[in-house]
Image 1 (cartoon, rainbow, N blue to C red):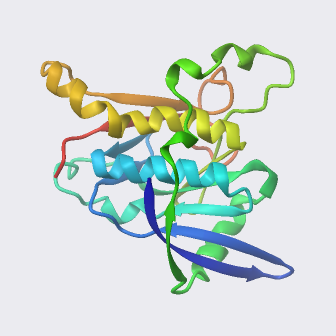
Image 2 (image 1 turned 90 degrees about the horizontal axis):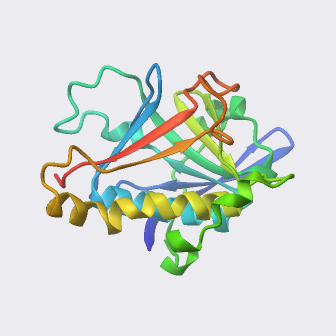
Length: 221
């Protein structure tokens, strides 16, 4: 998996942050806020970039992985969307980055240094290798947590959380097109990610964003 990025170093007061921003690719990936859930649309190329970003987040515990998805909000076929478009940031929980600082950090990004991340697909476990029962064990922490700030959705979690959920995200690239071709009457192909354990109804506690992210495959542009 490859992802073209620009790497930024941003200092605010005593703190310095490394921000890895994905550059615009050929695919579609756009994220909208909504009253009940957040909706992310991605075609195959866009899903490939999303999966690479998930893998990069798992490998980069000291970086914020930034996907400026609002740039695609006016894409053909999505003109009817009335919800608010959002950007996406993935980060390891050990970084302890407060989303309230994001607006200031984003304003200082500058041009950055171009870099292409090259990540082996073996970073993601196969679906049948994931032990879903582990989430019921005491001390389980490998879940994603949602927060919102400055028209951006933040997904925070451990490396294991990004690898495990990344397997689902990657299926939008590796499986969705074949599934839709085999069953043409199927309405859509999607994966759903939830805040925390998924047992918290309503909105996430930080930033008031919905506690569910619905990622839907769309046909190539």
